[in-house]
Image: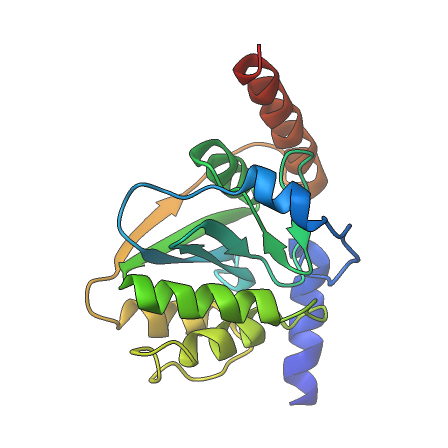
Length: 210
């Protein structure tokens, strides 16, 4: 277990799964930014994978039900237009989702994106669990996500793990999962991608309010 935790902490150093403190949005801001996708209820597992070694670097879960959020445990994503409370990102519009995946996909890492359709009831359970999780300690991104999933009805076969790729492989065994990869070849520095996508979201926000 000691070696496991050391490996996770090393991965966190390069991936942004570091448990940094995030600003806490108030309920009025969250309500103002809330977004509900018109499609079916879904769970989408993001696994950030090192392009050189194939090892996992970060895990997060987008939950689309009565509203669409991303449970981003111990994550680094920040954007001016995205309210954050604990490790839940609110207001995940299509533009924000693109910014999220683009920020993580770069020369050194790509995003594996796995989506499964669920019932509205399953999505609501996942949503409430994410909101109750509280801030997650660094290097526990996959551990907390796997614990959340195994509490959703129909996902009890998910085993708790610290390894992002292991969780991705477990998720792939669920019937009906659709898998895609998202890659970019820009700067390998995560902060550069975050700053670029924050600026782009601010521009889109400015255009939409004109």
